[in-house]
Image (tube, rainbow, N blue to C red; front, top):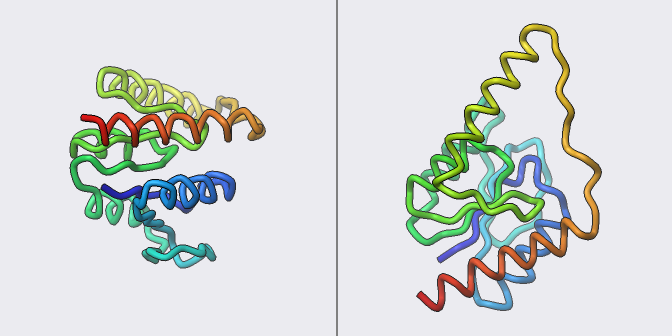
Length: 147
């Protein structure tokens, strides 16, 4: 098992929590980001800045039972298809039964924006987001160890 982080848009607090929790359970943490980012990690993979390049690398690194951290719903869908776990930086675990709904919502919002509409972005990150993320990540690890 490993933790793979989509580090292109990942908050620093989430990276720190992944490293800390991974260390507590002796789970390696891999980060993947374009060369435009300066990420400090024992297992860092640098990719080019082409569209979807980081996502493709993450999918290629992901094995069944791994844990992937991303806010990209499309990537989350592919990760779930590889029998891996996936959660967002705010600590929401993606579920196979719900991912199709999220992808449909993403498409509707994109269509709305293409038509000139505006959608609301994510809110400011809070300490509660950090606590939730840490609890969900640790919960996935414990669930996996006990199964």
